[in-house]
Length: 234
Image (cartoon, rainbow, N blue to C red; front, side, top):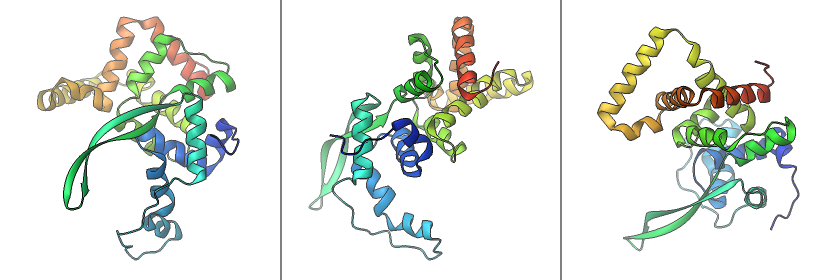
């Protein structure tokens, strides 16, 4: 149940708390209690905010229930279909023994981004365009890079800027740069296998270029919509 009503778009854009919480749910699968402990309870964060130089203790008492600021936003996003559920097996130490437990985690999908584009920019993505974006922005390493590179931006603008910088713009760089990327990609595949392609920025560029070669009209339409949403007219 949502106890406080939020304009979820303004909250993600203008509220420091809303922006921070949304990014924590976006980067990796987590839950409300874990977000609360990282954001409010961990003394390392508090001392960092206050500007203390001394090294804080790594021991701190964690809360067992999420704070309302986190829980209200989580419930709101869940009610709108913005969050995916993951059930993961983990080894938990209890009474000096390790036990295997299945725990629930949650992560923001891209439905919030599509809804923002529809409400604020009057831009709607097709199912094929959503399929491309969902695959490109699924790996945790990509999501972390999106937030890290655009730390002071809202999550909406962070996604748009990352797309333009790493996919749209990179396609037009000189050919010798592309040859270097191909060499790096071949080295990654040789060392870590084909699955590694999907979990690094170079591999995602390969996915983008493969889609553009297969369905150029779809990717060109996607490029145009992303640029317009960011306020750039192609």
